[in-house]
Image 1: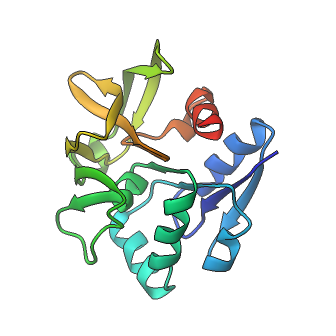
Image 2: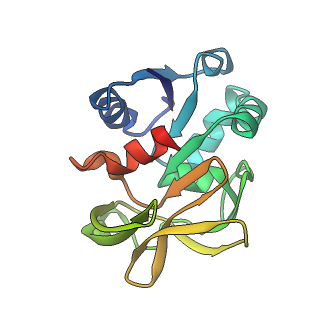
Length: 187
């Protein structure tokens, strides 16, 4: 059993906790750097990226998160993708810059424009369809050569990985399909 940390500063971190526990792993709600030392992996959930970055700075979590990510796997969904990206516009602080992705915040529109639609998913060479829940979702505008696309909505890349880092523009924790969480845990 692994200890899967979930950054519990804001957003719906509890849905990630439920997914992790359904997969037989221990969920650790992380609110400070000390709690990171208990974790084998970390999930950064969706939420509001500006608020997340304010809290990361206020709680002095930036360097601790970067140090953790250098050694262990991390999975960022929606706002988590933005926090992990190399750059994104209109943020009060720079993102963590740990994956070579340029993110566009709220690219699919405002809250009222949120939607659910099928995405094409390719995990471990196996193609499948996954229900993508997009809530004020970011887009991956561009990514570097070491970043591999794993999922698409129409022609947009909506999930990618680079080394130990996995990001998704949508919310897999809001579906009953645990395959993406399973992929992260086994990564």
